[in-house]
Length: 322
Ligand code: MTE
Image (tube, rainbow, N blue to C red; front, side, top):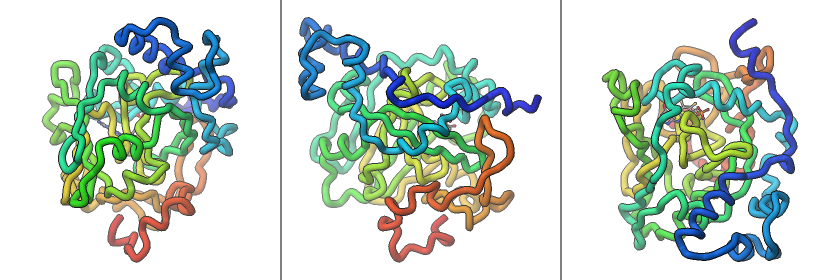
């Protein structure tokens, strides 16, 4: 059996998804706030839900945005999403990340938002879960290495956080930084990469509604190997832009340095928009291997999100700005 064949795609309907981590985290948050009972919070976050919660009511906590629902019969299995990962701070071996990251400590956690903003702040995971309504988004994820998945994320649009911190008129880019904890991350000690892992977006890309901060996958909080407790997801860009385990978000004037662009600028551009017409110097980007399926499928321009995102790139040469 070829390695990838063990990951069979198991279709799961969105209404079977119970976002446990959201109500569990809200419960913790409520306890901290001295509020008794979950109903009150549910009522404040999900209009129309006021009674004592049951499992089905917790489903009301997720806004059925419908974004990506056309992909629901193509979902990659939870086993594959959690078993085949890129997280170089732990290892370059995709099938060992889960094991090596299992003890990564992600609680307590906070994300610092600073730079060119009117309201800088520090957000705990609980703040992010309770301040921003969580919704499900089913997105294609296309790795620059020409494999792909379809992932049911739970999270919220990044623009909601940015609107709260209010970027100043000078802010043009958003820079993201991952946690770097060498004593818990074997691969971080290899000296092979200039960690911490950093990434960046133009401010208008960051403000686009498709750009989310993810807190869960299927019915679970993010596993360490997927970037717990909070990661970026930018579905029209190669997967390396979707930085994991974020500790810092900074609004800046200039295009920020990003790890892969520092390591190999001729191979990994700042934009990294999925483009089957622009090959990687060492391989074609025309097709991809969908994990859990046999054969290859055509890669879609902008990973299938061209209609939504092309207005961002009017007048930009996408071959030059790869
Ligand atoms: N973020 C950090 N901090 N470290 C990494 O090595 N790998 C990137 C991205 N985010 C990476 C990261 C790459 S190359 C990909 S394809 C995706 O995470 C993989 O996400 P997944 O393992 O959840 O599928």
